Amino acid sequence: MWEFYKSDMVQTYLIKTFHGLEGVLSEELLSLGGKEIVQLNRAVSCKGNQEMAYRINYECRTALSVLLPIKSGRVSDEDELYQFVYDIEWYHHFTLEKSFWIDVTCFSNRFRNTLYVAQKCKDAVADRFRSKYHKRPSARKDSDLRINIYISDDECVVSLDLTGRPLFHRGYRIFKGEAPINEVLACGLLKLSGWVPDTVLVDPMCGSGTFLIEAALLGLNRPCQQLRSNFALMHYLDYNRRLWESIKDEADHEDRDIELSLLGMDIDRQMMRFARKNAMGIDLHMINWKSKDFFEWRPEEEAGCIIINPPYDERLSLEDAIEFYRRLGDHLKQNCAGWQAWIISSNLEALKHIGLKTSKRIKVFNGPLECRFVGIDLY
Ligand SMILES: C[S@@+](CC[C@H](N)C(=O)[O-])C[C@H]1O[C@@H](n2cnc3c(N)ncnc32)[C@H](O)[C@@H]1O
Image 1 (cartoon, rainbow, N blue to C red):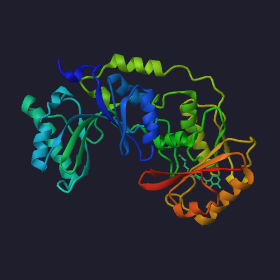
Image 2: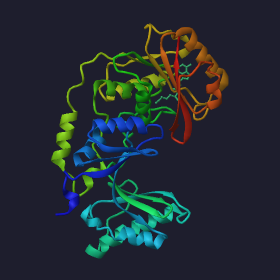
Image 3: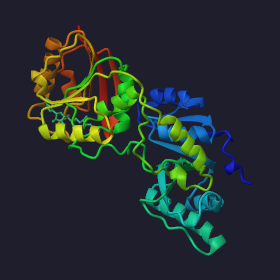
Image 4: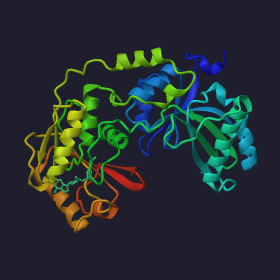
């Protein structure tokens, strides 16, 4: 039988994440059984077997997708690329009944038109099937399977995407506002902040509640993909249903017995309804939600962690961004001594006006927006 079918075979996987989260992802991969972990740019590679790849998909909180590279080599133009992709025996990986899609990441002057590259690769896969069965699988954007083509100059790596829709599609955020933070990013920032589940966490501008929902899942040690049922790995020929179900059963144990202290607030009542509904939808009843203006809030506890994703004056506009951030800093300084605050914003100019000394500054991206995640110890 083909090597590909051996679930205990150790292979190298590439796990994609956001810029700035490579370190926290590496720690997660280590705890999930990854070996020979190497941090790359927006990705981490590690070795492991099929079980590890399944665990990453189901349990890893800071991964976006899991790729299995199956071929690498040099290609100098589109025709060579076509042949390179055609030479893979695709029918050993999936059947005609499955649909597929090609994702291209290209850093090369030789291949300037990524749409054309994707088209060529799509033809190569389809033609290879046709050569054997006189039929081809359909190619659709919302397909079961995704094939990843990475080109850097003349080096090409072809990978099977074992995830499909990226892992931030957790399934709980049904209701959201104009500027929700990505779920994977939110969890990664929580980990970067050093928040530990037995301490108080407050998100005073919580919008749809992403930080607090991620924090609750983390604190309870509940898998973040419990609501999701479709992963690309289920559509390949080597899918081991028994293995997947045993990993799921093991991970879906009872919640950790822990008292969490989580408070979400927002000035917008509609947002509070959204956050509450999102949390209820995933059976998280321990988060306190209050509709409140941050500038009127005074913490009851003496210490804890405040995490804030304020409007950046991009998708959510502010009348006077500099004044808003200045007030934010003043309010923290005057009312939250003993706490640690973390703020993420792409408004680097306004961030300067917080007027508090930052103990940490981490560059991250919220979608296309370059942001800083700044930590402040409030004395
Ligand atoms: C960028 S959004 C937060 C998005 C959130 N992290 C999420 O994942 O949905 C900023 C939020 O700050 C809220 N906000 C703005 N001014 C506020 C204030 N003075 N007090 C409390 N919330 C405020 C807005 O209503 C908005 O929901």
